[in-house]
Image (cartoon, rainbow, N blue to C red; front, side, top):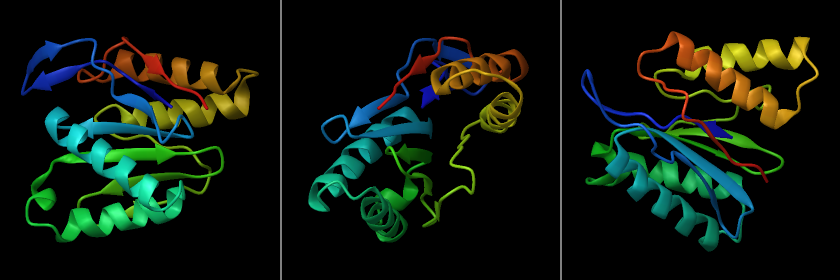
Length: 158
């Protein structure tokens, strides 16, 4: 899973080296965010707590967090998306209760997400890059297209 480092306030870049992707639950899962940074930190904590509560079951933790996120008065105001994955499964989580498992296991969220996702699909089908190489190159491609995406890329692997 990879993420860029750009944090923007409207049209202004306020940070270029944010870590939007991290290992969670004893380094057995990954979580990444798009959206408001403070909201994402809250969601990371809640997601990790759900993973602990459900003994590392990514699917159960994702569903339970999405339910809580959608129904809790404070949480439902959070403006972010989460991408979560373990070795077998990946999901996109949103505050509207969405828990989306992509058909091909690939996820792109945030402003540059569609560009990175398209690039990753093309690279998987037409290159010999390993997973880390696909993520890195797809993020570089997205950074070259999207003004809200930069090339300060962090990649985390399981």
